[in-house]
Length: 555
Image 1 (cartoon, rainbow, N blue to C red):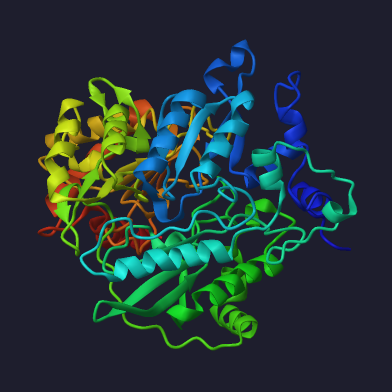
Image 2 (image 1 turned 60 degrees about the vertical axis):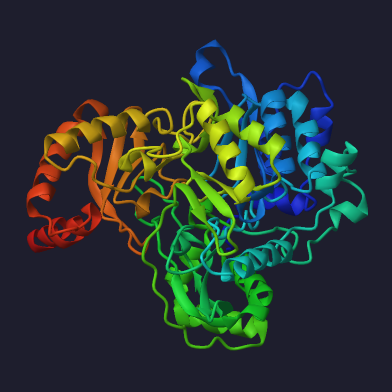
């Protein structure tokens, strides 16, 4: 007897265009929300249906989160203007930089969602496949590099994005033409995407490219990662890595975070073919009976690297070469003013938890809008939820600095080391999966940890801290030196032991720590770290060398 397919698989088979009844519901003023099936179809169009969990006692206040698909996180000034306008007109007047180099709008109402997405499309960007069982936003190094190889990596990321884009005409019909596709027509019932087929992928698929020695997109957390191999300032090809992923479920040991395996080296010209092949392995072998077990990482873990390598080679008709040597040294972003390889300036801007807003005398949203209005530059989104103002000329540098200062945005010492290296997911009140606070809670917790570090004599210590409101891992907490993962309201699982280069998973230190107990639980660990560390040793490396070795000795 065959295993039972999940409901998502059944509805994708029934409506392979992914149109659902989305357009009809938008046009129906009596419909307060989308039905459960359309909630799933909406994701393929870059939309999550949510409600304000702060006000649930007064009834559900339905709203939408809309996510842009922005290849490698690069926008022109004109495109940034569009996003800023839309956030004010249709959202909650904030923009949120995601951990996949995109922008999310929160608080969008059904009445405004079509015009919002049409405006994004008119700006030559999209929301198609920003969510759903397809390839998501393709990531690439955001920082203007000290080598021209960065330009090649960026162009290759766009090639992959194009190669893996679904072809359904429902997106254009709903959001541009404003019409409901006829679900009963033979053309629509028999539609089959040339790459994804009728049922698309078992779950989401993530791709990222990295330029050593900087691992600024966490390449080993990707379903498909490309590590650029550079010779004489030229990208000669990539080491292909596959099978990474962060998502897991509490109390289900068969779900876990996993680092990607390096499979082998490919030439740059073959990157589209290999990307399609890896995606179709996921399509054909991924679990369609259990969505918690439906990621490519489980295929790699259970079938093995050799099987995977052979399967990909069979689909491409080419062999992998042996992986080339490379070295990843660090993650994170550069802050402040720096010069790029062409002699232009770029400014790394700290954005706490990725939330671009005006608040408490730091009018970041206003400052960025003024800059977009006055200067034709690039706005680059980082995988660490920050922003880079790139391609700034000598003539414009001081004027941009003045706009930032006039709006209360610091140019130097933008954040303490702990805040500057932290990330969080949105969590409450918008995310329906969240078990605990994250974005609203983390800054205050970091302040308390900083006080504790001062107390034990290591004030100003740089530690990578990441927090999520649930175990799905959107802010990649399992790579952090300290990861906080929501367990229940006010209670977190605490993970220790990631490293600076983003090449090592952390491990659970405490399964449940309540907020009032957090600092007292951390105090003895930091006291030991302060006394026992070697010169220059980071917290995550000390944990690996000392705490986990002690644990292994006692087990």
